[in-house]
Length: 267
Ligand SMILES: Nc1ncnc2c1ncn2[C@@H]1O[C@H](COP(=O)(O)OP(=O)(O)OP(=O)(O)O)[C@@H](O)[C@H]1O
Ligand SMILES: [Mg+2]
Image (cartoon, rainbow, N blue to C red; front, top):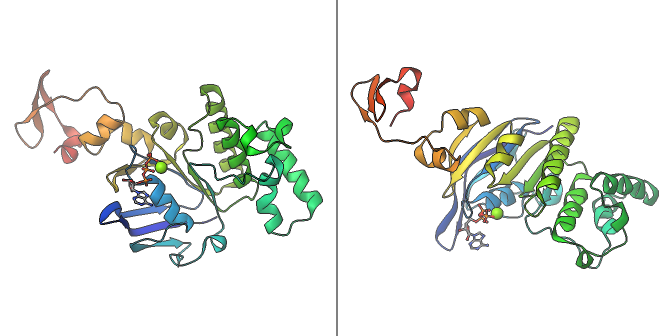
């Protein structure tokens, strides 16, 4: 199991910060979800953890070891990318077998594990097809199968369910969570879907404009959003303007209220 740490991690593209000094400490075996609107830096963060994107500044640590300059193949990570990245000239089963064959696994064992994985993602009947002969959702499942079959220690999933229908999405969600619970790999999943994040995460990092606005358990984020932007993004409708009358009290449209424990978080 691997602890993943992002320390002051930044990425600047042509002068514009895509990821702006984020700090994250992902515990061994934790399921952490990066949640935020389009363009907030989720994919860029994930690609830096994977080793596909070099940070502009800051560092990435696995189990207390600085891996910032370690190439992808030495990181024991598996990435399911937002754009699938399937090999067009290989069949479904060859795509799924790829990671096993580069590790030198005997062909017979490769085929056994690939067969098992294709059954799990319900694509056994499509084993001999090429990616161009699949629907978007089917391609997505091949991409998931191809990564999971290698049993990575750190699993990185970039919107892995974006093009699945509602039923398949909830089945796939359950499948990913079960797999995580069974193998215990540290998992970072990117999504802009609040329900998916609430459903899957041990903790959620809410991101806006390249920064982490809040890092907490789903309930905590839902019950106590750190700021208005997070509250709105989480779909709260009970936002209203109040006036603070003292350290412990506010005037609300529904009358005076005592803040109690919430006092510290009122801005
Ligand atoms: N290779 C690149 N060159 C220049 N700008 C880039 C590059 N990759 C990403 N960006 C920019 O960095 C910002 C963050 O992009 P990123 O792909 O990380 O967002 P995201 O949160 O994954 O969004 P989405 O939910 O739409 O996938 C965006 O403004 C994007 O345009
Ligand atoms: Mg993205």
